[in-house]
Image 1 (cartoon, rainbow, N blue to C red):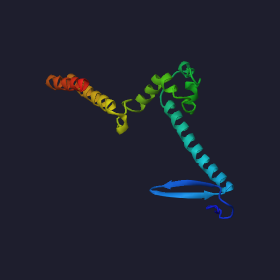
Image 2: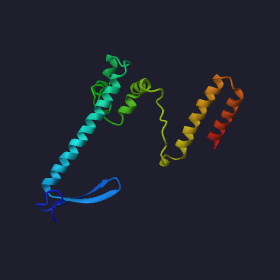
Image 3: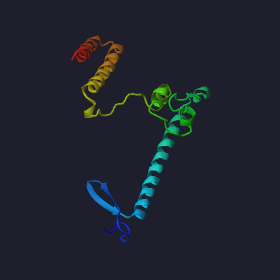
Image 4: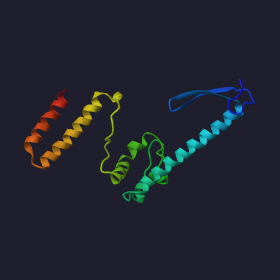
Length: 166
């Protein structure tokens, strides 16, 4: 079979290309496959660079990090907060725990909350859905107490207790 790209050499690689709802099997020779991989790699490098720049800008937006804090490093991968400020990504999954306070501070500067308010995946399970509902009810309870609406607060308290029991 000839290469679908150059139509000159024998195809040695086949891959499935999906765009929108169309599925197409593409056959490529070694040379065209190498060029395709370079294109994909260049695209991935551009995306990675944009993500790194975005993270760097997030850290630059906050003035809450002083020089001493910048020296703090992850105990697992040794990535420092200074590395992240320079635009590098977090080094490993443990960085999120190691730099939790700094990341939360930055997120609070960018928005009014660090809590996710989007949809919960169906696969997350009942526990996540109940936790989200409990947080929502607790927030409403706090508002009711501040506004001295004690009857509403009592109803919300009962709903929270029923949610915890069930």
